[in-house]
Image (cartoon, rainbow, N blue to C red; front, side):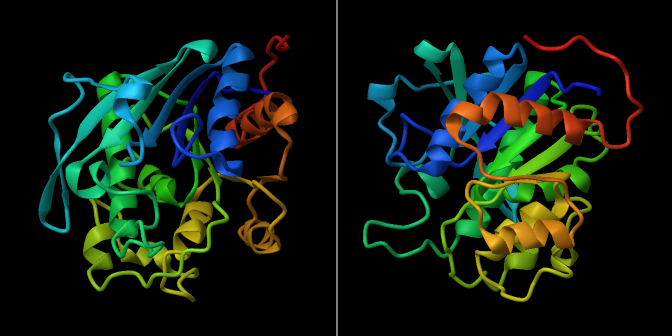
Length: 280
C-alpha cells in the first residue's frame, strides 16, 4: 500500500492550550504519535482568546502574517503565531485575528451563548490555514481536519484550492466534533462561504437543518475519509450514506497504529499499489 508521509493537522483545540476534552486529546496526542512513527507533520489551531500567550510562549511569525482575507466583501487581517511543545518536539501554528479570536472564547461566550458568527470564524480559520501552508511551501499528502472549526477545509480543498500545487494531490480526513451547536446560519451565509469556485451550492443534499451543526456534515461530505471521536450513529450513518471510508473511535494508545493505517488507506484511493518498507 502507498504510504502517506506528510500529514497536516487542522484542529480546533488541543491540550495544553485549552481545557481537556476528547477533541483536545486527539489534537495533542495524535500528531505526536504519528510524528513518532517517522512521518512529517504540521499542526494548526485557532488562537482562542482563552489561550494565555505568555504562559504558553506564543510569538508572532512576521514573515507569515500580514495578509488580508476578504470574507463577504470585508477585509480581515491574518496573524500567525507559533509555540512549541518541547516534550513532544512539536510546533503549533495559531491562526489569529482581533475580530474572530483575540478577545473571544471558543464556540460560546462567557454566558454560554453560541457566537452567531461561528460559521464565519470557521471560514476565516480554514482559509487562513491554507494560505499559510502555501507560504510555508509545504505539500501535505493527508490533511486531517478535526472539529466543526475546520469543516470548510475539505470543501475548499476540493474546489477553491483544487489546482494549487500545495493541495491538488492531497486527501482529506474529517473528524466531526460532538458539540451540539444549533445557532441558525446567518442570512449572509452565501457570501461567507463563497470563495473562487466554492459557493452555497456545496450544501446540496445536506441542508436539512440550516444551523451550525450542518458544518459537520459539510466537512464529511467533502472529505475522502471520516474518523470518529466516539460511536455517534448519526455520523457513522452519514459516512456510510456518502460511501466514505471511516475509522471508528480509538483509544489514545491505539492512535498511531490505527490512524497510520487509515491515512494510508485514504491516501491510496485511486493509486496503484507500490511496495514500500514497513514502519517500525
